Each structure stands twice: as C-alpha cells, then as structure tokens.
Length: 306
Image (cartoon, rainbow, N blue to C red; front, top):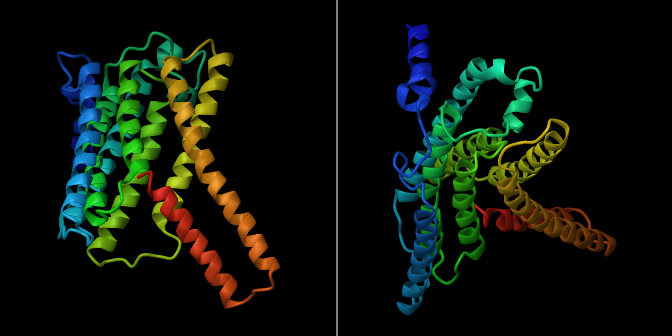
C-alpha cells in the first residue's frame, strides 16, 4: 500500500503528461509575457502604497485585526513550498535519468543542476515546477499587505522591493532557461516550508517564538547558499564551455550580493558596537541582554526582506 502510494505520488510529481510536456510560452503559460510581469509588479506596488495611504488618512494607529488569515496564509505557503520542493526534486531525478546520455561525458549530475547546457529550452519537468514557483510568488506578496495592516504607520519598502525582485527573478529563470534555478528553488522552497511552518505554529500558539528567531537564521543561510550557487555557475561557465541564461545570472548575482552586503554590514556594525559596549566594563546580565537585543535587531532587518 505504501509503495503504491509512493509510486502514484512520484507519477503526479514528475511523470504526469502536464508535467513532462510542459512548455513556457505565452499561449500555454498564464503570466508568461513581459507586459504581465510589468503590470503585475506595478499593481502590487500601487496597491501596497494605496493601502498604506488609506490607513494614514483614516489616522489608524493600531494594528488592523486579521484573525486567522495570517496563520492560514502561512499554512498555505508552507504546504505549497513543500509540494514544489518535492516536485522539483523528483523531476530533477527523472530529468537527469532521461537526459544524462546527452551530457554525461562533460558534466556530473550536480554540475548539470548548476549549469544547464547552452541552448536549453524552458520546457519539461523542472520548468513546470519552476513555473509553479513563479506563480507562488503572487501568493507570497500577501504578506506585505498583512505587514501594512499590522503596522499602518510604516510602509515596508524593503519587503515590497524584495517581493517585486523575486517575481521578476523567477520570471527571468523561465524566460532565459537560467542555470542553477533548480538548486535555487530547492533551497528557497525548503527554507519557505520551514519558515512558514514555524510561523503557522507560532501564530496558532503551538510554538513559542525564540529569542534567536528561526526565521532570521534560515534567511541568512538562504542568502549565503544562493550566493554560493552563483559562484558555482560562474566557475562552470568558464570551465565547461558555457552555461545557459548567463544574462539573467548577472541580474540575480547583483541582487543576492546586495542583500548579503546589507546583512553583513549591519552585523559588522553591531559587532563593533558590542565590542565598545564590552569595553565599557558592563558585564553579566546587562551584556547578555545587549547581545540578545542586537540579535533581535538583526532579525528585524533580515525579516524586512521576507
């Protein structure tokens, strides 16, 4: 019974005709045009700003009650991210099995995940799940609206910027068949499943929020990991005769480097401040409290990008 269930699940994730014969094109994929990309991001920014201004005009200072909506959103994001993770993992295994004869003399399976051969088209199993990931970004942006409703006095600029870039980035992955997207989606969906599962647990009272948030730790790991994937693509591009989608790779590299530098800059400043604080002779519980405070501040900076 268990084996049959696993086989059926694997078929749904990687062998179903809609997955195997998927193709990224304006006629077969909703939201696959540049006009849609520009319009959707513009609408997202406009709605976010309008909601913020509307609450300011109402002179709303207290958080707007949202009830169970954020918890349900977190649950939906956790389940969707876990599904995408399982789907693209299963599809990658199947794709390597079916296409390895073409590139096995020049690459290992891991190198294929990092560096698609030149001329790769956005069709097939892994691009189907890349498309699902792209669509999931539109569910992700609802978190911005929750943030605005919970804090009407402040517009989350970083969050709006980050979500807009994620939509654009996932679009470029498909449009240019960008290398390394499989590993990026695997790492991002694993983190999202963990983070949103944790958030759901805390929002319904099943888990208490820790002093060193799991959310912050996961997001720092994600930024560093993605930067590592970028470096790997660059190395293979010059050693293996070229990787597909290098134009989009440049855009993603700039973005990830900017985010990492922002986090590291904040962390270094806080470490220097901590050194000065320790030099002042304050020890014991006061020093511990100061360290905890700075970790929470770092967490608040990183969470602005979620």
